Length: 443
Ligand code: FRU
Image (cartoon, rainbow, N blue to C red; front, side):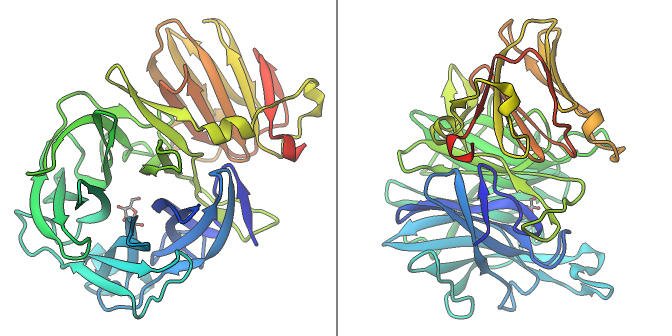
């Protein structure tokens, strides 16, 4: 059985967005966009992994794959809901108008239509892709309501006995919008309302809307939110939201934050954990595949789970307690560090100080946390090599997790997170390091 620790990686070949993240019958299930034949994007399936603690992941067989006329070209992103003991998975079903004759995994002229569908499972492990699917919202033929091609990524939740669905969409591929449907039985859906904000890119993907205490948070991935020609121009955002369930009226009055200032993160999804915390996981985009001993060449990995909290009108992404206690064995002797396993560095920097992790440089400049990966990300000319957070107001406490191809920096208790994909980190540390921590079980 293939396993991953801390960060879920592609089991081989390609993965992108997290899908159907849920704590169900005593286990966390995480599905994901998966192309199982090569480390590139293609006809989408839902891969599947489970975990008991959000730290140790076990890969399972592919859960959802095309079988129907309406989903013949892909099972796009979506979410999970538990209802009457069953696991319901909602997804976007893709049908190409005609296939590219040289690559049947893409549509000719990128022309396709999208409907919304679901599949039910009685235990979260068995999925009958022939018998248990249902198309629930047909392709939109009314542009006022939704775009026929770019309406996708249903995120479903229950609130006061009703079920709500938020979908990402676009107005004529020019402005992102989100569309709301409602249902009393989680199967039959009616269109209710939509949000056209004008500030959210050209197409909005993977929307999520949830309550934390008295606050509501919106997360979404607008395409072309950064219009500078650099990889990546599409990025994940979050903002405080106001939402009226009766009318599905959404407003996003304030400023948005990036979910992660490394800008490699995309397509985030949240749900509540076993203790009711709001937990988010997202996809870290990788410009090229990695070779490994335990799987075929792979591309794509998830962040570690992050706890979403709102304090004083700011959205925090904090280290999950399960990760915090797992990565808590302090190394007395740095010489003991095994760079091939995950490790954690805690440090408090002063303005002139830095940490260098195998060529990845983290430093403070003009009250901003900066990261420079140019020495460990050499071959990719059009990607961002440096990243920075907003100003940190004189406090630079960093909690840094390093695991193979990912470095995640939590600044000031998760006020900002900055994560990057890196390649070929050197086995060498320098600069200001207060503590090195590892998982006791991996020593
Ligand atoms: C975001 C996304 C989703 C879509 C899926 C397809 O990365 O484009 O909007 O459902 O990926 O793989």
